[in-house]
Length: 605
Image (spheres, rainbow, N blue to C red):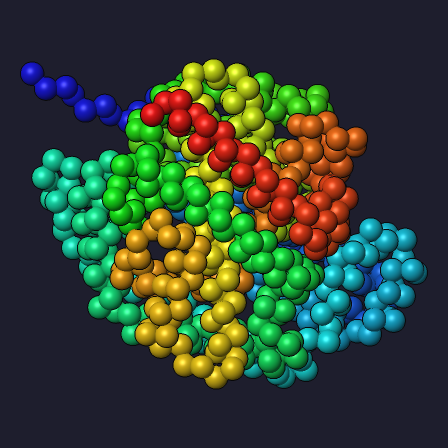
């Protein structure tokens, strides 16, 4: 007799209490249609406002508020349709709604795209004069100053039009990489855990790297890189061309480098980037220690790259139901204070969270929403420790969004990626501390510590390694160095060995890792994962140690939105990210956790 495979419930069979309440956005689809028609009706006005920004403060205010208003209504349409679509991607009604909202988004973006370029045709004196003359413009000051701050890098209209027209060309290396990497590559079939045949894919590869069967891990590792080796020259060409595009655009816009150009959007000093790389390099011996511990625990004569993701301590010794996780989250987040906890409780009690997996539901987890909606959370729950971490992570995002929207006007009602991960990862740090205080079994504590250290390794050390290589490639291209596959592989291999140390046996295949990293096409993006994680570790430590005003300052950050530049927001939170202190503090936390794990292992083994 065989067990019947567990079937996912249909959407309509999921208990209502375990679903999000989207009637808070639109009571029904008819209300969605009414707002959709309103946006369509007011869209033609965009063209009548074009060319009026020089007609005085009142005309400027009218155009600005029109654009913000149409954007605000559009957000409601887009969020409602994408959440409805994600809860059951097989539902053709909401496929259609989402498609129409996406098309309207493109129409609106095109209709209002003239605003910022036209604003930049006005002099600073004229624009700032408007702010003084019209009181209703006063709270738009930071937004306006942010737009005009990079005026020196804006080209004459004809040249801007040429660059805009070439946008698709500049994006083509990334597009080509994506098509080749996601659609055209054919990965080999390997033998799985029980001798079954497994077709490798990106997703399957990640799962197999966590396998406890070393032969399977090795086969997957060598199998996937055998394909990248075949296409190494093509990938070197797409990546090199992408970097050339970054360097070219920075040069024509009168930036000193592509990095300066990329960071200027959020007014982040380049020292933030350099500090990250330097501090992480100074603390690589800690990662080397962790690799040596991994080698010892896995009882390996040689530690290979395909041994870096398999669990150190076997199957998780603890798991929590959703109901248990809600209680754990509320306890873990108590150091955040009553104001914060009140929002967390509202999330759990007012159906902000779509909890369980159902047939057709989008995979993964995220926090979403618009300025005028609750900050909804999508989960696909299964009882596990990592799901508890995911829950407090997404709650961190949602509380950040809630406080921002409640305390800022619409124009500042969002926040940059540079700030986003700090709120979610601070919560993860608080959860780790809570679990270590409440779980007494050595094997459980060791598992929690391992979970934390692996997260730190993957987010701080690994992403900084990527950031260091990304900058290296841009600098070398600017010097005229050809970025051939041989050049990239040689230098990436040396960098990888520097990061992981003597405990790791160098695999020829890992020298090609540069060829399969999508983030290398994102233009100085990955460093923000590392800075955000490090800032979160420092902030959580301040809150847990009850440093004077630490919590009050943290809440100020959560409420700031985009009302100031990200670096200034973090200074008010108590972390100056232009200095190295927060990075060194984070490394100190990593070292403490590593010390404790080493001590526990000596008791267990």
